[in-house]
Image 1: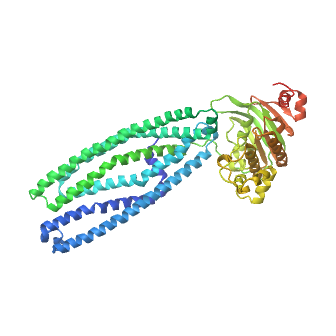
Image 2 (image 1 turned 180 degrees about the vertical axis):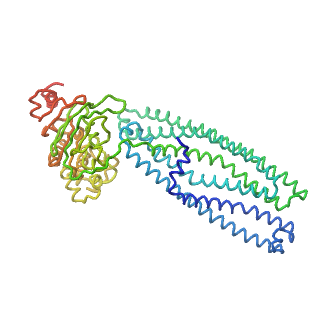
Length: 586
């Protein structure tokens, strides 16, 4: 895998102009920042030499006029330094915000395109750590670290030129620590990089555990497992602290070592330059400039460790973000659009297995005529839900085809395919917001009349209008302010409003009471008119009026017919019916 920095630079290519402007302002700010020591040296030169100073040779003979000129120059230089500091901070920080925004959107957009098989291998908290914390780490570096590196480089180049221009021998002594510092920085970078990679992995594991436990807080409380979960969190948090401790131990050792190298160069300039000035071989003003510049040159290098530390954190995070963006999408959509879809569904010789598992479907065949209602029953793991996942192309078949109106779903654009299928699942997911916003989720442009009509068809109007705020009532995160039956009716209203030719119900009544089930059955009878309905159910009462019912076992259809025909056959379906109606034993 390439280094994160070239990958980041390639990603930031569209912002090359902003990067160049920000870089230029950082360099110019440092150039003006290095000018005051030169002015101080010139002032010392004026005080010591008066009419024989360097400024006097430029035409300003009067020492007072020379000092006035230096004062004016100081104000101008400080003004320019301030202007470029404002500009580089503005440019770098806005660039950081822009890249953070684009990376988060690109990463999240790409995550949405990945198939469900990939999701099953990814802890939700780890994804949140990448999309949030890792992106923020990059922002922190761009906010200040990039400018620090540029200014340190500018300082080394400019001060080196001044030193070699005034006294090459003294320059060699002053620059003596720099190779040692740079070598140490590269060694430090190589050693700390894997430590920060472990830190990022640890924070992802911590985020995953917290996300999972917050989602399951009801179960934790029900099983009185608070203490156990706290202990589990303590183990993961300790791993995160330990990973940070290793990085901190190495990081903290860098600056003291750099300081000791710096003092060598500063003492060399102070002593050897002082002796040259005492012997008259170096002007006092020039000596003052060199002493001040030595401090300006070497002291910023103490921050190099912190900057490299910030850089390594950012690069570890950048690698994780870009690796996520580079994850290949396995579900590649087709180019065809369905025009006036009717809703005929065909499974033709379909074989499918989830990753690292035995086949769920083997040479499976089924045709569902447009406008008909099909009930699907069977034991857990028989492949019922898999049919829906293949129809919606959450997964692709290993053999055979799934057809919608005679067209292989792999040839269709995903928006055309999934826009033709309205889905109501057993686990209803509602978004934070109002009742109306959730109903119109599939059709954001639907007006209030359409929303209320869909709710009426789903028999949701009664409870909605009893809520404080009615249609504008907030439903809470995941709809936690509503009962299970109320959430299910809103999901049906959402599917109705989408007005798709195919309606899929995956265990839509398994988690509701009998009264709610009866209401849902009535609403489904209405909304199913003129649509192809595929109803997967454990409760056989939900599908007894279906045009056709198929019974699945181990990925195959073992029985097929109407409710009455299957009861008359006295097979698997009849046995299930007897158990559910209390007329027989399991």
